[in-house]
Length: 357
Image 1 (cartoon, helix red, strand yellow):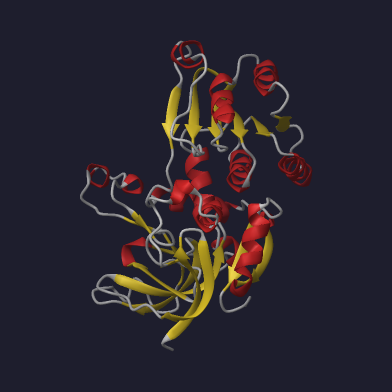
Image 2 (image 1 turned 60 degrees about the horizontal axis):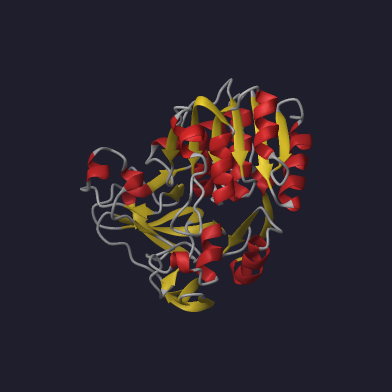
């Protein structure tokens, strides 16, 4: 096999299904993986729509896709075949790091100053095969459902965000109930948060949050808040002063300010959401932030590899996120999946390059 199919970004905002992409060969200390399933991410929506926020990151022509699982197919020179036997069920961290910048030297590999990302500026996993650094490969338990294994990348973002500070027995606000916010809610509830407030402004997101609460029997531990109607007052009044931890997922300036305002004195605000613009104005900065002695945390990606270990442990303990995958389809239907995901009609879409097995 010398050619494969894959979704290639040909120019900013332009993509197409190709069937003549060369099958990649692993170089030294690299591994070729046969892709079993891939997940569509919000970043893919931004890339494929030509969003200006991605202009400095994408490097067309490039094969898209950074959420996936698959099987070890070929080892490059210098890779230990005993550590990664052919056929091993795996996923991988798609940030390719330098290993020499101050962040890497301190062990914060996820914050590498010069990281390149497969599926964004290096060829990714919306294809039949992908090559990654051997050190980035993560072995998966054989009983992990393939549709869950395909979305470990975004689930890892949520695990990193939710567990940035301990939330067991603490009150938590989740600002933004998209896919990552939904994962954060599941994680916070699973690890024992005393109460979770879920906030959003979209009717469909609020409906999904209420359905999740009902399905999981969490009405005594989770409150869904319509953020269009005095959300800060609602949360502060319910908690008699504010939540212990706010997780800001929306990236909207109003959401960022609400997260700060609804967090109690000496509490924590964890920021994962990315605003569309370069600047965000913090309202009543002294009163809402400085005089409350808040601690702010910035989250990027997944900690390598602590987050992966935490995530797989939670899944082993019984945390179930399979219901967040609301559509599965062949890779050939990428355009349909992208459109439905982009419109918020699906929570997570999983694609199968070789069909569902």
